[in-house]
Image 1 (cartoon, rainbow, N blue to C red):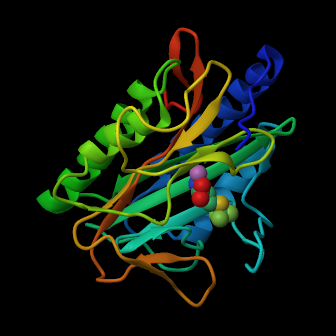
Image 2 (image 1 turned 45 degrees about the horizontal axis):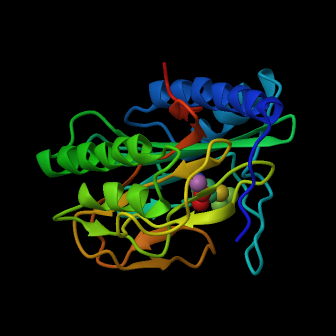
Length: 253
Ligand code: MF3
Ligand code: CO
């Protein structure tokens, strides 16, 4: 496995890609309310990215065997875990929706997601969101030179006790492409795996569910749903590993 190290110049461009991602994601989160549809949010994302000189990374993304992805965002409601295609389904009070956004700027990608509560949600949903977000922060905290990838995965997994920790999907390296080495599972053993170095940039994305961790893909070729229909949450940030520690490139102000 070869992991790309970014030059200071590349990192500076990635900071800008991350800045645009966080600004647009903030607009999207603000627009979430009962009645709004995925298509409306997707249109907003496309416009706001273009205004800032970026490109929507996800549009046309077509890994082997998959239809080209149509949206600028992934929009995954309730039991939909990730990669939901924005459609006409309107959000309802009590839903939780993961909004995942990729922005390419001057050839470099930023990738980030937030699961948002629509109005008041159940106490279990709220705890699920809190735990998944806490897992992301714990992973970020461990993303520093001298640590190993297993330290990051273990820190994330430790926050998932009592939840279904999804196994088939996880974090990844980011750079000129969205999905690069290394793959970063959301569970693992501390002290194992790749040694982290300054200059690496990674996207961490814990995914937890209230029930079983088993997932399946729906027949649109993209949407990943929990097999048992349970609520699921997903948070993601793009993080640069620097000599000073983790620097979150996609943080919302
Ligand atoms: N953050 C998601 C991931 O890393 C982005 C999916 S890209 C899409 O898997 F094009 F598939 F939507
Ligand atoms: Co990602």
